[in-house]
Length: 304
Image (cartoon, rainbow, N blue to C red; front, side, top):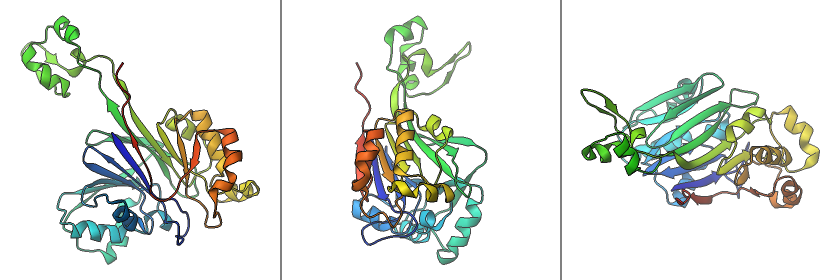
């Protein structure tokens, strides 16, 4: 199962009732953080999740409302006696930006490893999950993310026997190991059925609508998407500053046929997102307004 928590849903500046942008996922004993706005570590503490087990921090871009919480978070992780490396990923310039922020957090007990995205899309495999990064349309280099957990097929006894796989290798092959023998190589595909449906969480903020977003988030179990403005009359402002309205976001969710959708990254002027939801749900009924600490546990579909 995959736990998701929207730690903060504000854009531009924190408010007494709304922290800045961040989302955390928990899977298989590891935490993945996307963005780290001001107040992120307070939200993590309030949620009761672990700082020390953060495996990866991804940044959409380097505007302050998405990264200003990082120096304090790094110090807190260091105080948790972490020593293993921490990986960060983001658009080109990540190492330079983080090292500049570390002027106020210069000594850490763990090393930082950097992955800088280059091009329209890239992906990395981690500990049982994949991260897909895809470029979106903001006024600085900015990426959206898919967090994907693939699920292998079930063990197929008949297939293993047809492929003449000795029983002593069955367990290892089920775990994805590759076994080299003198006369052939054994792989998991030789004993497993077709892949089963996994889990997919998509996250985009600070962007205009693009067809690329639709294609990358298609079929997501959960799509967390920027809705900077709920007021229909602010469409021109959204276009000028490369953001989205609730209604534009809903159209993306509908076209991509996502299972459920949360709005996030609200303008400070937007005080009550619920006031606009009737019009939004007329476009796409599966949209709900995000809020700080909104959480969900996603589980694999049961086998038939």
